[in-house]
Each structure stands twice: as structure tokens, then as C-alpha cells.
Length: 261
Length: 307
Image 1 (cartoon, rainbow over the protein chains, first blue to last red):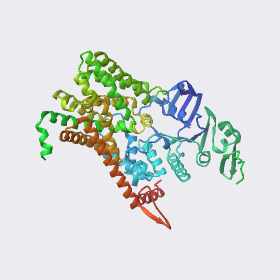
Image 2: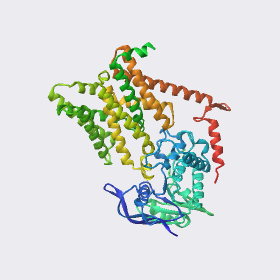
Image 3: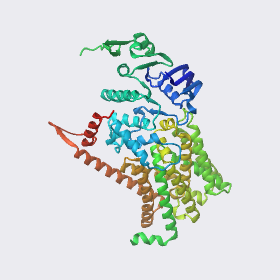
Image 4: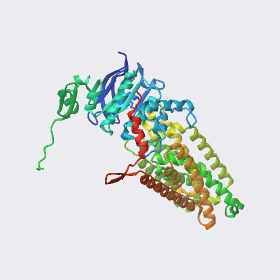
């Protein structure tokens, strides 16, 4: 398989804090991979490094064998964490999707007919056509996630990067979003996401990267979700229950209450 | 009608009215980004820095606009540079830079022991003293800002909404930020003679917030804010003439009144919507925060996603 995203001996960090050192990683074309790890382990820094907005201290990040910052019109679609979005901002779903087409060139504020058609076509495909003119805050969690996904997809990217797409939404929406991503991946799109939700990863993603200031292990969920690897990734014991093809990952030590109910 | 036409017989009123309408529209446009970027304090700060520059300009016999403009731009660049350091937040940078520049102006005034008329205008506003030269400067800045913001609408909107994502999508966010800071500084400098340093923040914030109460769409908010800013400028001028009170303060008070009215209208509208959506489940009467019919339609849409 051809590598789509390649990190070679990369060291990255902020100011005087190094987040990870000498990291090498390959994401192959057409892969659907999830990065899991505890809070503050450097997942978001890794994504930003891949996206080319986090300067690397040493090493190289390649996108289809070219340095990420030299790729013209980078062709990476990005979906931010929904929790970081300002929901009071006065934008409609349509305006959010259109942002994916914005460039630095001087252009007219209003959308062209071609742009409108592209927005409508994609919105229809993702099931958000009827809420295009609604304020973004007046939509459901699933519709919001789809709106940002549409913004990322409208420019026909080669790679899709999502930061915590399953956080802040209910189980039904999580399930829908991951299935939608699976469908997009089956059409050839390379997808990389971060998540805290091990159970969602175990049941939906074909490839997992356990990360804690560096790659602890990577592989298929069935091979990766072992007590040893998860304990090494999260720094605490984690119980894994296997039932047929399904995995359930739980906290190991139930909280013991001292008072009688 | 007579109430509207009579003041126009006076050149000072015509000049003042034109200046107030242009500055109102200008601040309305730029104020949308100021408010949405959470920079409401920056207007207040930059006007103080520009005042320091105006005083230095007066001492060294520069043109008022040159002194105020140079110091305002220097302040904007310094704030921009300081906020790149993750340990200094923008409100702290604004507080340090602009207050220091204002203090410099105050120190120079205390040494001179005199306050030039144009400095007095910058401090408290003197719309009735607006000259033809001032009108040309205000007109040029208003036109240039409107043209620049028209063509930069898309990168400005994206970087205001989500600066990090805009950067990832290839928008040159630092250049956009710098151009915006430049336009904001110029707008503040030309507006200082209208309402003065002490009240300029209000002219930036009130039209934008009034427009925000009226719409949930960014493009519509910009158009409304321009219109509301111009209306506040014109209305304030007429009220100032009718009641023979200070023009700058009247414009600000009229703006506050319009804002309160917009808040009231929105409140009534939301209440009506709440009542319209109220329904009963057994003994429980309740209302969904969103339009029910729309939600039901949306849920149906989600269920039939085209793969």
C-alpha cells in the first residue's frame, strides 16, 4: 500500500515543552485509522503536525511523498472538535459548508451558482439539505457534525482528519457519524481521527494507533486491545470483555462507596 | 418634515450629519468583526493609544491624523506581536500597550499645561467642528474599508469564525488579522473626532450587537449593522440639535436606546415562538426550544440519509 501521510523522526512541541520525540508513522492511502490515548498525550498536537499548522522541531512530515507545507492546496479536509466551536456565532449551515471553498483570493462575498450547486448536492448526500438555512446552533448534534464534515469534504480532499468526532454527542449520533465515515472511507478516502471512546473505536474502526507522547502500538482493534497495551497507553489497568466479535472496554476498579444506601 | 429640513440650513450641521452617517456605517461594518472576535475592548484601547499619538503629533507640529495614525498602528502591531506569546493574552496586551501610550500623552499634556482644540475634540468629540478636510479623510477611510472588507469577506468570515480551521484550510490568517487591525485602527482614528476617545467603543459595539439581535446570518448581520450604525449617527445628530445637547453623547445614548429596543423585540419574538410551540404530553405542558415541525422534518431527513 502507498503511504499517504508519513512522519519521519518527527519531534514537536510548544515553547519549551516537547510533546513527542523521534516519531515515525505511516498512514496508508485508503486507511481508516483512529488515534486513542489519554488526555494530554499529544493526540491533537500530532493531528496539527500532520495538518501542517504545528511547526516541527526536527524531522519531516510528508503528504504523498511531498513535505506537507509545500503541497499546493493541501487537499486535507479537517473537522474540528465540536466543543471548540462558538455556537453563538451568526452563521447558517450553508455558510459553514461554504467556508470549505474559501481561498485567499479576492472574491465576491456571495456564492456562485456552481458553488451553490456543490453545497446543495453535498448537503443532500449527507442528509442536511433541509437545515441549510438554519442557524448552526438550531441543529441537532448529528446535523452539526455533518455540516462540518460537509465543509471538510466540499473541496474533494484526499485525506480527512477529524479531531474527536465522537465527543460531545450521544451514542446514536456517535454510531451514525462513524458509519458515515466508514461509507466515505469505502469510497477511497483516507481517514484519520482522534477519540477518547475506546468502545466506539473497537466496534467501528479497522485500524487503531495507541498514543501516549509516542506510538505505543498500532494494529487491528482485536490485536491492539489487550490489557498490557491499554495499561501502557493509559497508565492504569483496563478491563476488556470480549463477546463474540464485540469488545467492551471498562474501568477496572469500581468505586467502592463507604456509606450504606 | 420641517424638523428634518431645518437643521440642514446650517453648514456645521450638514458636515456633522454626513460625518456621523459615514462613521456610523464604518463602525457598524468593522464592529461586527470586533464583537464576533471578542475584541470589544480593543476599540477602547486603540483610541487611547491614538490619543497619545495625537498629543505627540501636536508637540512636534505634525498633522493630527499622522500622529494619531502612527501611534494607533504601532499599538495594533505591538498587540499583535505580544499575543503571539502564549503567556500574554490579548486583553492583557491591549491593557499594557494602549494604556502606556495614553499615559505618555497625559504626561506630555501635563508638561505643556495646555490642551489644543483638536486634542480636546479627540478626547470628548466635537462633531460640530468637523471641517471639509475631515470629511474627505472620513470618506476616504470609509470607502477604502468598505472595498477591502467586501473583497476580503470570505477569509475574514472564516478566520473570525474559526481561526485555526481557517489556517488549516489554507487561509493566510496572520495577513488577514494584520489587514483587519490596520482597518480597525484607521476607523477608530477617523471616528475619534465624532464621539471622542471616551465613547468610541460604544459606536463600534452598539450597531453590531443591535444587528446580532435582529438576525442569525453573518451576511445579513453585516448589512443590518451598517444600516443601524448610519441610522444611529443620523438620529443622534437630529436629537442633539433638537434638544441642544452634546452630539457625541447623544449618538451613544440613542445607540443604547436602539439596542435596548432590539433586545426587547427579540425577547418578545422568542416568547411568542415558545408559546406557539407549547404542547401537552398527558398532564405535562412543555415547549421545545426549537421549532417542532422543523425538528421532526430534520429527524426524518437524518433517517433517510442517502449513502
